[in-house]
Length: 178
Length: 251
Image (cartoon, chains in turn green, yellow):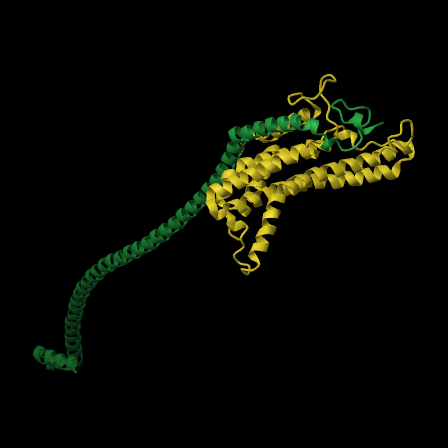
């Protein structure tokens, strides 16, 4: 097996030496390499690189967009909470005002009613006083009369000679006073 | 090699046969346009890349599917690497860097399939890519910076007496870049596959009792899974570094 015969393009059954150093094959390999690299280059430039970079940019944009949206929603939630708190405080203040106004109204009504009731009571009391006075005067007159009659009868029964109506009346009046 | 290649011997290992380039159809001579096993596996690499980066991302979903997630991870990985190293100005060259990375990493991984052919194990392939990077980066350097690109070799932070010597070293290292750039990738790919093939040869020679070689193959295969991705990464990151030198030559 001489090495000269092996250095031909048609390989014998076993190659002796390094096939890498067979310069007969260089042109062929370089030609096909250039073809391959050019094809790969155009596939990458025309399709693969734009597509992958688009997808990556899109994903980056989507993530950024989601983050921005989340930030926005958070701000909205904070604003809503503030609005709610403000509305609540306002409602509280209004309720307080309404309660105070209602209280004042009620107080006014109450005062009027009390005054009216007081006046009525006073009138009734005066009326009653008058009625009592009348009754008392009536009673007093009746007592005087009864006393006069009784005294006259007693005097008539005890000493009929001394029957003097005027004197008896004066005496009864004098007694009733004391 | 010639002792091992003795026909009829039980110990018959040909680790380099896997790198031989053959025409796909017939036995004719290989001219520059002949479809070969190398072109077949380059085509498979193209199909794999289309499958992953085009078909896999067809959903364009905000919440990605698995394949779309893989495509996005690779995209972001290369994009971030380029931006970290070469800065915002470097992102203009992202499609080229991404093309290189995808081709190398997919070719490397496809080469690990049984009966696969590793296109990136050939110095013709890696040297073409490395030279393309070298030439492009040098042109970008001169177009962007004009004569200022020579600042890359003239280290102004060093003492004046040392600068000419450093300049010579820097220039040599600059011109060695494409060599190391290409041989690193091809060498790694070739070595790993050759080692697997050697162990496979041992296994073949031992027959049914070949437990140790099979375990060794599994171990080396696992290591190779790591190496193929790392080498694609290294090739790409060095390209980014060279691009950074071209964009910002001042040290």
